Length: 432
Ligand code: ATP
Ligand code: MG
Image (cartoon, rainbow, N blue to C red; front, side):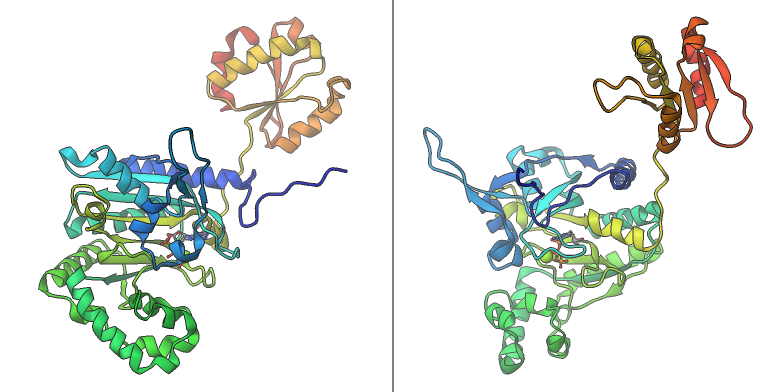
């Protein structure tokens, strides 16, 4: 027997009925983004490796060990290119925005949805192909846009019925302020070098800020006592942060200040934030983002401020499940019972008219080529299992009268009625 093929480790098939929850989430996002005037952007899944190295930063989990990178085959004229499956989408959005000079007539509000790839250890809420939905506002400097993005996320939680979250915020200030803090932080960590784990030691001089983000319980006391970045911020950075907090307060979005929130990517400054939950174990961050005012300029575009967030679709859906939120059942409105294959051309015609009129219909179809349509009894069993509210019976007697019988399958003692095939539009609305 042939070897059975399976999906790649850490990469999941999303099957019905689970996929209906994904579509519902995506539909909710689309409708919300439209109300906040964010427009859709779709970038390629493959990019040049250097795009991510330069934007995310060399000394980050993602670039150090998580990227799916490979060398493409050389084409006729050129060298082989180093390509990477995108591990996140902000870098690509920034590339696209500068490549197409999208900011020439002012700021842009954009959103995306799609698969991302990171070679992590697969576990609940952590996969190798996972999905993000993200919103980015490019070309706006003020804290009102940071607030708008956070309010947008909070509105999404509300519309999804997701309640079990808290919002943590911090300010990373500006590069000069970070440089001063960094020197003090390194000095503090060096004084306690014996308490650093291996990863922290490795990062001590390359990316010490990231040590504050450690999940190692043995280092919590140490990082709690470390110099706080917030104490190094000047008046302008603090004013931005205070304005954001005031706007969140005015809109009833509760937040907590987490001075250790630093985020795993290098490109952030000023506001950073995470929506977290305690209900998903150590994969508790459902949405994260912040300001990245220097990235566009660093990537070779015309310098412009920007801010954005990305949410993890799998984690949001998992949290909704934890909370017991059940998606409504997806079932067709009607199921077509077809006793005799000869009627099929006429049946298809009627179903086309019903669907054009907005009715969802599933047609009975036998599994094998040679076994006929199957008994009425077995077809009614299928109709029932489909969850449909009506059976449409295309029997010889009905067709002879130019009609189809519409039989209610659920909800009590309604009568079966004959409906004319020539006037589908008149009775279709009753089935919707
Ligand atoms: P974590 O600390 O959990 O690894 P991160 O800081 O690496 O998260 P970001 O790069 O900020 O994550 O991505 C934004 C969001 O995407 C995360 O908050 C999370 O919800 C989701 N996410 C990130 N990596 C994964 C993954 N491997 N599997 C599933 N979701 C993920
Ligand atoms: Mg990560």
